[in-house]
Image (cartoon, rainbow, N blue to C red; front, top):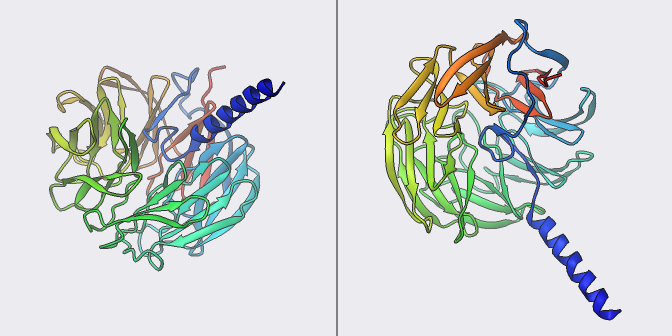
Length: 406
């Protein structure tokens, strides 16, 4: 009996340990933070007016952040009368709770920037004015907060802090951009500082960082204004940096790691770049560089051996061969953000057009499109897909479309 009890206890321990290690993370640009949504059975074309709208909600305030969806909840940030808020809605569009997060950016492109990150019942956001806050996802209770400027000696940038926070095990990472406190890891349950990295001592950019998991270590990859940097996720040690070309200071595209290589797309000068990462993660070597394909935000995706993105000049969507970096195809549909699901690109242009684009080994074909029925200012938000539903945000409004095959 005692032996049987010990075996049962050991199995329970393994189950609990496995559960703790296998964190469920809901975050910016999908489950893997790469703009790819693992959805199936979606519509392959839309009516002229677009897919059926399930509902819309207004009153979420000014902002450019995307919503995240988990279970029966939708979380999104916005700014109303200079104050930021985190909202929780149900899947019918009814407000569950609304919590103030402090002052938001009011100098230019006013509104919230940070898409929330949800991990095991806790929500994490970063305001444009530098507050990193942890909330209880159930009722919105604030658990802790850290001010990156006051507490971490950070220096804000000309359009405000913008990153969607990255979490890894019990750490949450933020980039205050101070000369000595360039990157910081916080305990995700208390906000306590776990490590501080000077990195390159460079100002922060507008990117949401990404995580690389190697056998020997985990690496955080993020932009500063003048460098792409790789930090040891456990210690904050600077492993390598790739200096950017040109004078552009807006780098809003999260990098991508695939098959031993890092891909990034910078706003000006550097363009699209592929780097080979060493096996130990301590160095990078440039594989190719295409300086003609530049974009400041909106993201990119890699499907098969092709990278799909939008281009700043000329304004268009395009594809690149991931082996050579050469342009494969282009699509005259303005420029903007994009995500991928079920063999199709979902493109959201800065002029408010939404396009469904078929891709095939680098080729791009616009199948359907419609005009967002709300707003006239900048359309910068990246769309989200969850359980066959497309979530579109423009400023004060969130519109929800049914894109499932019947």
